[in-house]
Image (cartoon, rainbow, N blue to C red; front, side):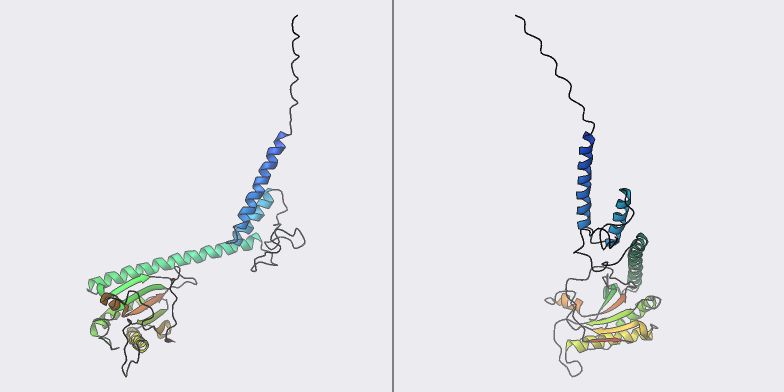
Length: 288
């Protein structure tokens, strides 16, 4: 007996709404992405405000940020940051124009820092060239740090005799050589005296503090004689509290015995990250 042929199964009904599942998944992923981006965006709140407002408009919003404290309405949604508002923006409405102004200000500050660093680097090259031509390059070591350009003049057999604060003729030549370049700058200048850790106890200098301060004052007076305005100069004595080398060796102690002429950067923020070593307070700081 012949088997009956099985009737073909009807074709499944086409689901024309399947795209909605994919669309919903995409929106869920986008929401998760925005939340993650928001969580890590505290570093630059101004940029986040611009991003949030742009995203809100792109998704059909009225152009206001729904996160309370970041430019949103106080009467609207409470927002996920209701109990964790940044102190600087709480209760304020930061519009896109103000946010853009904040970003422009930060960019201008960074540009000023870069320009000042380049200017000080050029000064460093100029001084190195002039000192080399006079055979005095080994008497000076220069470095740019968070304060500005630091010109370290070694004291041994250059600026002073051991245990004294009277400038030698060789030291005066070094100061006279760098003074014209410093005179043409608008920057403030700090003159710092430093010693090694070998103690000194004399009637004139009871400790390294007094010796370092007296040496800095002697260098400052030469700079004034060479034409630098006194209101640009600051004096400081640090004794042995700011070594740049180890005091365990003769060469290290020789480097630590120095007077530093610091050309302060003309910017509101440091040029570089401050040193991890805490800077002690000088025994004397005087501004002319």
